Length: 404
Ligand code: SAH
Ligand code: SF4
Image 1 (cartoon, rainbow, N blue to C red):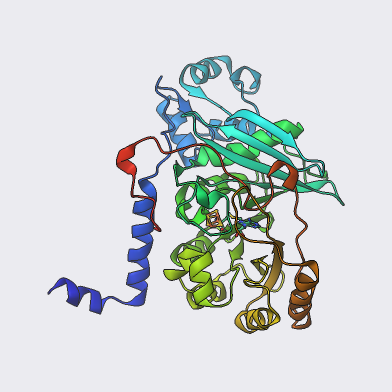
Image 2 (image 1 turned 135 degrees about the vertical axis):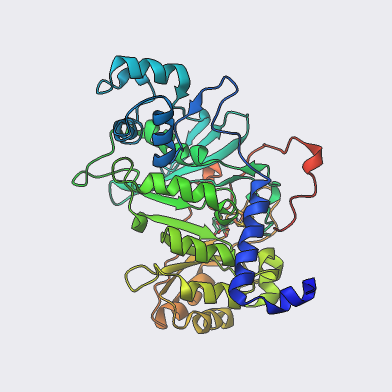
């Protein structure tokens, strides 16, 4: 049998599996540094429960210690083994010797006049990423916007992050520790119990990078975030935003079933090909089909479609009517996002009255269509404004940053 025979005999399901493997293999080329430090100690933040348990067993300890240690790390927010009074001194001494519990270094922390707070974090190898906390002004709660990669492979035309090549993926430790370090900044440890308000109540994977091109690390970190004996954020309070990596949308629905947000931004393939180049690989029809399959989508948990309003580009009333037609049969809501300019960007935000006309058409069709108020623009913390100076180190990696 020839290679061509193999291909023609492959079912659509086989092809999707192949595609998933290809994405995961490509993603592995941008791996984060190992959890084992050069001095031989292991970073505990970001290990799964099973990995933590194995580490303790390898140290000659009982399995039940896992729960205690987990509690100290993710419920109490401890970073010093000496604080762990429920753990006996001999084990504490071993942990001090062989393990660490770290946070990224806070390079800068800026608070906007609207209270949005942006952190620039530096990781062990010197690479940097930004994280934003957006408080809800009407209640004691808010969303932490977490980065998944340093840079991004996808060059969406309106996005500042897209002008920075992908440097590398963030590890599960770096992803969850963005949330933990933001909590440090607000002093929100131990994890508030269900009857107390939580300032950091929600996670949105909408920072730098495409989370579905770093799926394994994202999934591991979100499982830690959702664990009830630690940070305990429910899947209903986590939203993953993607530009439409179709095969991994299915995987994410199957494994994590968190809320999904799709960066749609255009209703015709010719325009979307231009402004969201990933559309050339996964066109609108395929992205919407994956939304229809997404298991967590129901009346109470709708899929969010993000739509940046670009003046004269995608904001006509005909576009709004086409959007309504496309969304038929999907439990959806549409977030209309004013375009946030950044140094060198070449679009203009739509006029207010045009945004309102667009929103009205969508609302009349029965979909909620809030117009997002930009937050933290004065400190470049709004959607699509994040970027760091990190660059890829090895010249030999050049050329890997084409669309995956
Ligand atoms: N890579 C993922 C998640 C990060 S981007 C994604 O593309 O979905 C988070 C959101 O910010 C996306 O909806 C993105 O399209 C939007 N965005 C990017 N640049 C923007 C800009 N300049 N103004 C407003 N929103 C922007
Ligand atoms: Fe990457 Fe999302 Fe920005 Fe596109 S919008 S370049 S996918 S971070």
